[in-house]
Amino acid sequence: MFEIGIVQRTSKTPFHESIVKAGVKGFTVYNHTLLPTYFESPEADYWYLINNVSMWDVSCERQVEIMGPDAFKLVTLMTPRNISKCKVGQGKYVPIVDENGGMINDPILLRLGNDHFWLSIADTDVLLWAKGLALGYGLDVTICNPDVSPMAIQGPNADKVCAKLLGEWIYNLKFFWFREYDLDGIPLIVQRSGWSKQGGLELYLRDGSQGDRLWQMVEEAGKEFDIKPGSPSTIERIENGLLSYGSDMTIENNPFEVGLGEYCDLEQEADFIGKVALQRIKAEGITQKMVGVVLPDVEIKGISSWCKLTDQTGEDAGKITSLTYSPRLKKTIAFAIVPMAYTTIDTQLVAQMPEGDVVAIVQEVPFV
Image (tube, rainbow, N blue to C red; front, side):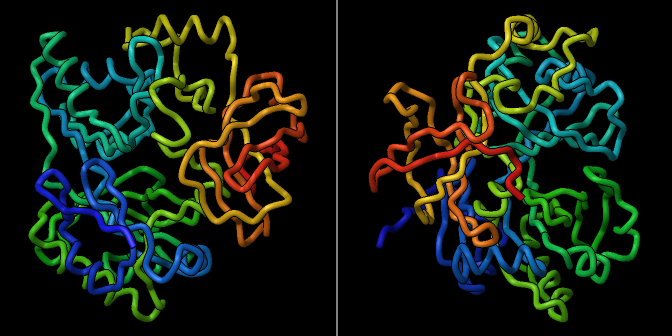
């Protein structure tokens, strides 16, 4: 058994005591914050998400708050996505890239006011990037990590739980749109979002002292639906083509390589960071691409590190970035970054696994 040392630089969440009581069995560290990984088992938690409803502590989705007269200017600098039509109360998925077009993060942008934004980030220090840009460009903004801790309610019955807890109005909430809401004195942002394809909402808690109370209220509202504690499911996300920053893409990858080209408006007037680089990449074409692969001859529950791929002659053919066994498909599936010559569907490659070399066949994503 391994232990994680919880020290000052590793934050517990406002829901920590509640998830311990709920029987959490594993953690990882994400944005310097403890993220529960499973409760009953990864597969059992997955089936609750697929068939019913689960509640997640995803406080690790830290918010980078940008406020002030130049807030819109700074956010526009940070992303190749055109946000000129993003309205107050609306969210957008926004790649953030560096001067070379490399992916720094892929957060959800929330516009709380004309000059007030949150970036709900994946696992990198976007706060420092934003502060550096603001200083370098001399922008009049205030940037911080506010007291905001999201929890997610996900699954086919998520809306029923949320309607009981919050009201029937949640059914009219469009994808990525949000609403400020006071739940019996608990200040929330309620957004139709969440890191699954099963549907649901995220409740952004704006007062960390109310974490256990909010958890208990969601638990109570979900009792008749047999709600269970859970966490973002690696199985479900790979089945449905959801990429994880840090695993499936890093600063070494550009948006076009990982299927995010549709979020890059290279014709917009705004001169965002990385615009010239992305225009060049698009004109010249990418040299590698994210694909799905199926490993039909093995049943592998997880992998601890990236796995090398070769072609049938032993030549380098990229790497697997995320891998899981799908109980629904009854096969091992994975994401891989491969050179363009190997992207054709049904191309047979060889995965160099710790267990030995196995066949890996290129497939379309999503798998489900």
